[in-house]
Image (cartoon, rainbow over all chains, first blue to last red; front, side, top):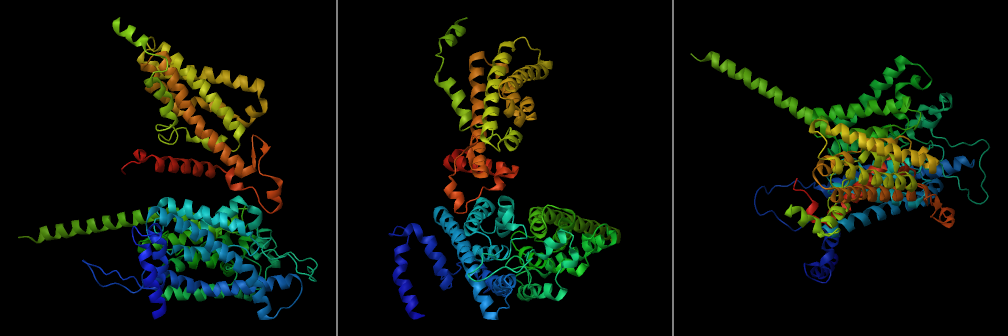
Length: 394
Length: 219
C-alpha cells in the first residue's frame, strides 16, 4: 500500500492546475479517489458523514450484480452446448460463456467510460461512477449474440442523450442502461427478437441438434405455445435461453436480497413491482380470453426480465420516485404495465423495459402529487387545530 | 415625401436587409430558437428528398405570401386580416400542390397531406402577422425568404441525418459502401421512427447554443 501511495504522491503534482496534464485533472481524480478516500475535509457545516458515499453505493450494486452475471456466463455456455447436444461440464460451459460475455463487458465499459471521461474533462466536473453500474447492467440485459459495435453505439447514445445532456449522473430522467437497450431494440430489432439469443456460431465438429429453435420462453408464450414452456423449476433456476443476466430468478433474488438489506435499493419498489405484476396477471386470469391471458401468475413473474427489472432497474435511485407513497405507486404501475404490454401488445414479447422507461418519465409527476397531497392534508389538520384552539378560548 | 425619397435610396441589400435573411437562418431560427413548425419536421424528414421538396415549397409559399400581404397591407381591414392571410396562403399552397402533382408525382404522394398542411405552419402565419402587415414589399420578401430558409436548413439537415443513418442513402443513392455492410454494419431503424427527428433537432439546438452563449436563457 505504501508503495502505491508513494507513486501516487509523485505523479500527483503533474495534474495540478496549470501543470503539464492540468487539463486532465478530473480524469486523474477519478482513478485517485477510486484507490484512496478523498483527503478533503469539510470546513464548515456538518462534519459527520456516512462511510457509504456514492462510490461505495455503486460498489454495492456491482456486488449484487455478481450472482446473475456468473449465472449468465455459465448459462451462455450451457445453452450453446444444449444446442449442439452435448452435456457440458460446469467449467466447460463457464469458460465458453466467459469468452462470449467478457468482450461485451469490456466494450460496454470502454465505450461508456470514454464518453464519461470526455465530458468530465471538457466540462471540468468530477467523473461519476454511475457508469460502472450502468455498464454492467447493459451487459446483463443484452443477449450474448449481440454484435459488439452495437453495444458501443447504443452506450454512447444512451450516455450522451440519456445522461450528459441533462447534466450527468444524478440528473438523468430515464435509466441509461434501459435507454441503451431500447436503442438497440428500436434500431436493430432483429438482434433482440427473442429467437437469436443462443450463441449458434458453431465450433468445429459441432452440429445443431435437429429441430433446435432456441426461442426464449417469453417468445414461446407470445407465439401461443404455452405447452412448450420449460418447467417452473428450470425457470426458477434459469437454465433456459434468454438475455445474459435475466434468466435466473434465484440469482437475481440473491442480489436483490443483498441490495434490500443494505438499503441500497428500495425494498418498497421491489415489493410493489411484484404486487403490480401479480395483480395484473390475476386480472388477466379472470378475463382469460386467450392462451396468453391464462398463464398462471407465478409463471408471469418467472418469465422474461420481470424479476431483473424489478430488482435492478426499477430501483435506480435517480430515476425512481423519491417519496415513500410515490415509490409504492411507481412500483405498482411498473408491474401492471409490464404484464399489460406483455400480454396485449403483439409487437414486443418483453414489456418490463418499456414499462420502466415509461414510469421513469412519470416518476416526478407522481412525486409532485404525493407532496401536494401531503401539504393539503397538513393544512387541513392545521385548520382543525386552529378551530379547536379558538373554541377552547374563554 | 422626403422620408420616402430617403428610403427609396436605401440599397437593395443594405445591412438591415441582409440581416433579414441571415438572422432567421442563425440566431433567430424559427425552429431551433422559436421552436415553431416542429410537426412537419417530425413527419417528413425520414428521407432527404421529401424534406428538400417541402423546404423549397415553404420557401416559395412564404416569400410570395409575404409580398402579397405586404402589398395589400393598407387595404386589408384589421378585423378580417387573419382570414385574408389564410386565403392567400391557401391559394399559394394549392398552386405548389398542383405543380408537385404534375411534375413530381411520387414525391407528392410521399408528402401527401403535409403539402396541404403548409397552411397551418405557424412560421408563415407568424411572419405575416408580425412582419408583412407592417412593412414594405421588398423587406417583407426578404424576411419571408429568410425565415423559410431557416426552417428549410433544419429540415434538410434532419432529413439528411435520418436518411443517412436510417437507410444508408442520400437522395435514394446508396452512400454507405457495401463493404461496411459486409463486415456487419446495419442501418439503424430507430432513425426512421419520429422520436429520432425530435432528438436530432434537440442535438442541433444543443450544438447551436453551446457555440453561441448569448442564446442560453437564464432559466
